[in-house]
Structure formats: structure tokens, C-alpha cells
Length: 344
Image (cartoon, rainbow, N blue to C red; front, side, top):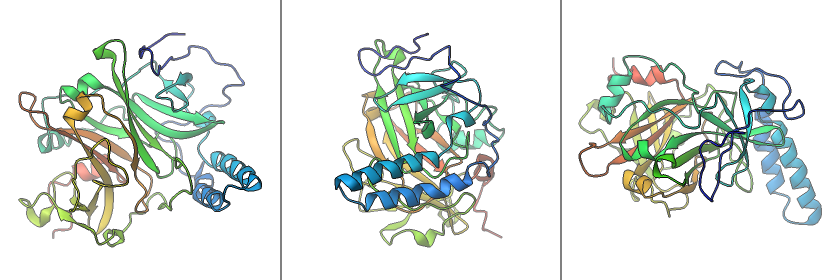
């Protein structure tokens, strides 16, 4: 085994170089996995977990919950659906067993020369070559229960951005929540952040979701969500993004101690929701803060296509912010919007 990176006395990631037939059967998967392979399985997830939560804590009910969770796991993409280069890893951030491919332990950044809207304009000039580079997958009983990326803390401190982190390596359902875990290592350069999207809830019933390919209407947002940002652009439409809606009574910057969905932002174009977003202070990321549970299920959403971690600020200025825009539509679609697509 090779230890990369070594994460001090706390959680570690150790990539294995061998595997057994019992650990893995079959191959396939990848960025272009056909959508029909697991669609029937995904439909089952919400119903199974909702039924499990209604059973209470009676011993017989608890047994049924265990059985229903096992069935829900069967409804998720399987380890055998992943490409053959993915190998078993040990626990990461105390969240169970992970798989990683290609021997890479972190996501390569997309540079620190451009920030905010300027970065989006720059990205629109070309497409990302390898959108699943650096992906890691959490597994449980043969099912892939979460997908994410390891990002170097030093890249976030330096104000580097990350584009097109794909969540379509397999036919995943809509995630229930996002966790952002700081992994402290023996050296500052080896510190990592694990950005992880979970397809099962931490407890209780799974919230309703929207099928892949369908975009919820903006009218599905509760009345507390109102339009904000980009008033300087026509129709309040942020170029290469969309219109932004949030609960104006709370801060749009997510504090590490905040619970619930405070600060969540939804994006809209042509009357449909196209992304969900959280905003993080760069100084919190530099300090090694963690966000164990960021809800993504307050409003039913479809599966995520891709996301970017975009830095706002100047490298030579005070600490800025990072936005995690999680899109339901392909990157080339929204990067092509220099202006509101609904305009004649």
C-alpha cells in the first residue's frame, strides 16, 4: 500500500494497489454511463427510506428500518459500475470506506489568475478535458452512497478556483446534503478538504427529488426566497450563471456553526431552477473549519450535473469568498449565457 496523503494522527486516506475478486466484480461506468442502467434503482431510494422513517423505534420497526436501508442501498449505483481503475481506500473523515482512481489524491485547480465573473468568461472559451479527475466515492455494502473530491487547503488559501467537478461519473440521484470536512495532515501543504455529496440522508426519511432531465419551476421556492444580486445587469441576470434567490433575512455566507438551510441560494433561468449554492468565507477555509451537513433537500431538486468552486477576491487583498454553485444543467449551457437567454 502507498500512503498518499498521510493525514496525521486523525483520518487518513490510504490508496490500495491490489484488490481481490471478492472486493470487486465487473467493470464499466465512467463519464458516459447510460442513464437507463440504474434509473429503476434510483426511483426506489426515496420511497424506501420514507417508509423506513415512519416505522418508529420499536425493535421490530428497527429491524424493518435495517431491511429498508439495505434495499435503499441496492437502489444506488454499485461499486461494480465504476471504472476498473478505482481501488479500495480506508476511512476518510470518519465517513466510511472510499474508492479512488488513477492514484490521484486531490483535484487539480483551474488557476488563480482569474476570479469571480472574470473566471467564468475565461472558462467559456473552452471545455474541461477531464471533469471527473480526482473523484472519490464512498461505498457501503457494495453501493456508492456519496461522491466527492479532495481539494488542497493551500489552493483555497491561494484563491485558486475549480471548474466542472462532475457528479455524473455514474447515474447518481439528487444528493440529500453536502459535507465539507477539513482533513489535517502533518504538514500544511498536505492538508485537504473533502467535499462530499451524499445520496442518502444522515437519518430519517429521504426528501423528495426531481427526476433527471427535469428542472423545477422557480415558483416551487417558498415565499421567503427573493431575488438578489446582479442588479447592475439586465433582468438581474448574472452572466454565465443565472438569477439568484435566497432568504434575505439571513446571511448568504454560511457560518460553520449554522444549522438548517440558512444561506442556501437557488439559481434560475427561463423560469426554471438550474442550480443550488452555498457561499463560504475564505478565512474559514484557511482556519480549517468544517461544515458537516449542508442541506440540499429543502426544495426537491434533480441530480447534479457539475459544480464549481469559484473564488471572489484578489490574491493580494483581504480574504474573499468561495461560491459552490451546484448545477443541474451542463457547464457548456450556462457558460454560454453572456446575457439572459429569455431575452428576445
